[in-house]
Image 1 (cartoon, rainbow, N blue to C red):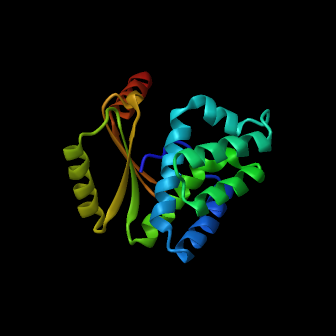
Image 2: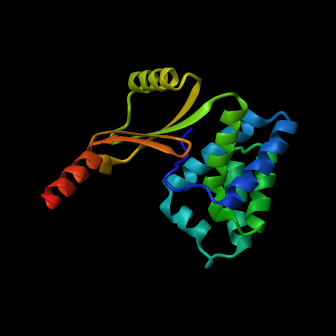
Length: 186
């Protein structure tokens, strides 16, 4: 999954994700809807102007819905997800789509008996590193995990792992900040 999780999902995003999850589960379209939402979220995250436009009150609900309808058709979003995106847009929540995609993926992972983990590194991990990380975290937690990989060059080095509300921060940036604070106190 590539949807960014730098911002936490709002309560509205959680509610919309739950509603779509229930519909997708009932229609037996969980995997296709999740994949489609993740592609959409990746596109929104990759295009700063699109992300800002969807969140901006300066653009009309109708304009946002029209743009999202075209994007949905282009990426061949499943029909259920496409209709859902239309409802979200018409309700003035187009800016919450990335959060909705994240919340939906978390629900889907939980439904599959997996724990969702967000791993943030300073550089993109290789496939071998990602596999080893998944194995290590899975062993440490004692259950299957679904790891979302993110890159944040500001970490300088190391890794941050988010499991639910817990954060394990082994980044170089945090260690340097701690050292700086210790030196200020001396």
